[in-house]
Image 1 (cartoon, rainbow, N blue to C red):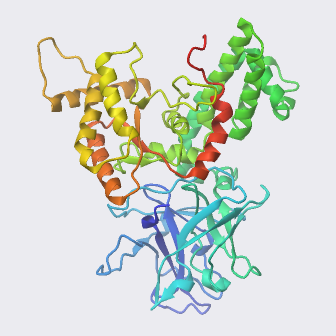
Image 2: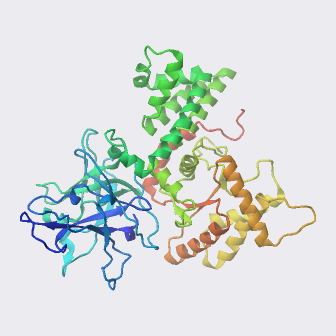
Image 3: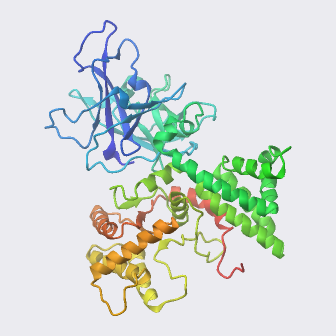
Length: 530
């Protein structure tokens, strides 16, 4: 969670007599950006209950808490027109989206709205404006941490335990709208502190239910799920073609997913493939990966050309469907960082290079592409992750510049080597992606960089595939700033590339490795016959 993006929300109120408090009396809440101009908060904070109610004579206001000066005439408060409350949830779900047209230039980025369902026992973090922190008529933000407690899927909320909480429920007032971050993603938005728990619990609206609420598709439109629909449509047609061309693969998956197979009864062959793929795309990613691996294994255990062909089809299916099923909130957020003025070095909410390729495949709307596995347990790197060897075979010059760059990427970042690191990137890219010029002509390095940058952009536009480079962010602030500065210069010159850094959470890494292990075991190994 980037706590510098925390937003305070103020809703002017009046009493039951309609007394005019000149907009100075009101309810406080918390918000957080989830798009370039979208702020997530709780719905109920916009509609205060009796004895105080919303005073329509004065506008709701928001403030970027860490991006305003005490010298500001309006103290940083930005008025929000009623029309800019662009979405409110329905029924028992409690969330709202506010459009803010004025964003501080230094407030870069936004939160990832996840589709993940809450899992018991995982750690959550957040920050908000509870009444308990009020001092000298000013509320200071307070950070919170605890464990997630899931609920039945029919419930409109999930629970959060809190390690350090206010003394009573009144002290919590002001945290409504606080984002619930798990593994750098927003899983929910806080709505209330339930009674009779000594202020040690919170209730939160789950993001996944907002994504799947069939009563209202406005949330999905605003968050950007229309792009996912286009990706799904392209993936759906390719999956149908694969399954129709390999009936054995489709039947093998259905054996592993009997609940879906039961829904195929009474359909003709053409309808079966379409219906099967439709249900497959609505199934949990973990369930799909394991079913595909179990089906794949059954064909690997028997020799024969037909079995190998079916196993290869199952691998192709997995490489198409896994990026389509991966948390679209992450995919959307990463894709939104490309070329929109956000930070050049994009922090992925992922710990492994294997998952980085799944995310990038989702961003591009394509199947995953991996290097061959080196052994049975290997979780490989994406084929579009740089540096890599040229596909046409070993080139001496390329091997040297690749090795030089790889040494910089593999060892601890050294401030004194920033210039050498940058030169190593340039040398690798100029050697690997040379733009041919007329014979006998020479170009200075700056011109060659521009030609290579144009070639990379042309490749990306033509193929729909994005080359990317993964960096390890240093632990120290000085090193982080130096690396970000270096990457910003690279992004300026090579705008077609994406520059990524991985999360270093060991617990998150364990979960990722377990998720993709069955998937990786289907991928080709070095020396495998086609």
